[in-house]
Amino acid sequence: MPLRCRNLHFTFPHGRAGAVSALEDVTLTLADEEFVCIVGPSGCGKTTLLKLMAGLLQPTVGSIDFEGGPRNGRPRNALAFQEHALFPWMSVLDNVAFGLRMQGVRKQPSHERARAFIEQVGLARFARSYPHELSMGMRQRASIARAFVADPEMLLMDEPFGSLDALTKLILQEELLRIWSQHRKLVVYVTHDIGEAVLLGDRVLVMSGRPGRIREEFRIPLARPRNLLDREQPEIVGIRGQIWKILEEEVRSGLRDAR
Amino acid sequence: MSRADGAPLRWLGIVPLLLAAAALGGWELAAREGMVSKLFFPAPSVIARTIVGMLDGGRLARDVAGTVGRLLAGFACGGAAGLALGMWMGWSPAVRRILDPFVAAAHPVPKISTLPLIMLIFGIGVFSKTLVVAVAAFFPMLINTMAGVRQIHPVYFEVAENYGASAGQVFARVVWPGSLPLILAGTRLALNRALSLTIAVELLMGKNGLGSMLWYAWETLRVEELYATIVVIALLGIGFRVGLQQLARRWTPWQVERTG
Picture 1: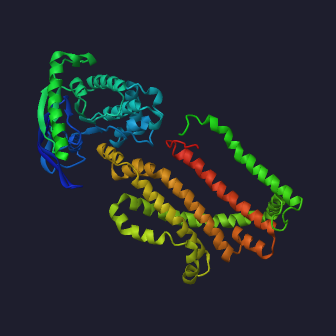
Picture 2 (picture 1 turned 180 degrees about the horizontal axis):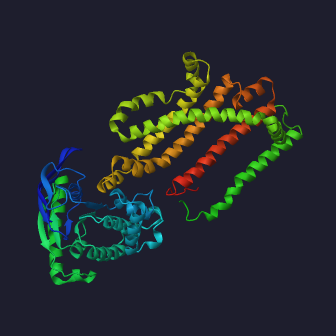
Picture 3 (picture 1 turned 90 degrees about the vertical axis):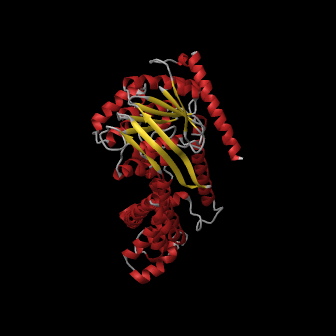
């Protein structure tokens, strides 16, 4: 059941400098159970692309189809944000169970399923805690649990680990891969961390600066399960170098344009 | 949030109690020794005895009940209207654009100044008295509720929408809890305003209630009763505040307590 994005364009009509084109002619096919990473300079429309896939925004031009899906149109998806992901007024348990509750699952069974995932991300002791009582890393674990527990067909992640310290990030990357290997589904993972992208993704799509287009696509020839050291293999180091060259060029030209 | 546990500051909590005790003690002494006029500044012990005396025969209880009844009636009407309209204005930018100028124009008008007009139109009855109190409670409730809805980060609405929440679910799971801390703050302001206006209305036209007690004490020059009534009114205000703090602790447990 691949997801096809055809010729997506998206324009913000009310930017400060008039209409701003955020995405131009993005065409993608994403396979079932694939882990796709999208890297690009900041402001390139990565988040916009995710919100289009999530159905929170409608494309100005183009279409998104989920072929063979239960409904004609958007797949059941869960979006994980970088920050503010959890509702501050709900306990971890209520946050994780939120997606299930919205699907109409009753409180008791939804809490049971939520607890199973909370345990998987190592937060069993904190099920009754509120987000402000948790560290940033624990909050992101809870929001990963929330995204997986609703059993979406597609998981959209917007720099979920962007605000974490390097060590916590490494640990959560491995945990994400572990949970994903147990609950395989299509993941679209936006990041600006090249090392993260090649470690996690089956494919890495590199976007240009605004308006965002897909400039290049790399397959990551690493077997799974992967571990942290894999990204130091010569072949992978080569790919990282190529991605970095593209991004460097994009960032520099972006700086020139802004002058 | 200022310090990890606030322990070094905890003992400071008794300082205000000591200061108050010292001030009352000084006053008591000054009044007894005749250093200040007993007529204008009766000793605290005299005021306390006056309060106990007013309790006798249920007179104070009747007046407190009258004041609290009027206050709560006005607060319930005005607060509910402010809550509903504040939600609507916070939710809908269009409604906000249309109604905001009227709120901005009406809010600064001292509500007591409308009392003569309201009496003229609606007569000298319970309705007029309740209406003035309701109007006073309405604005802080409206403004706080609107601010409460507007300060909810947009990402929470996106998360709710992304998980397929209906409009009713968005209200119950996002709008209501998200704005509740500011609604409770608005409730506190609204109750304070309602208390002020109730006393003012009673001063002007009360047959019973704490405000009319004040007026009666003034007319008969019973200074110790003036003090006693003010103390009772202050206790009422403090009671509302403590009650609301308890409610806030129970209803908004995610709010980080700010000490200091």
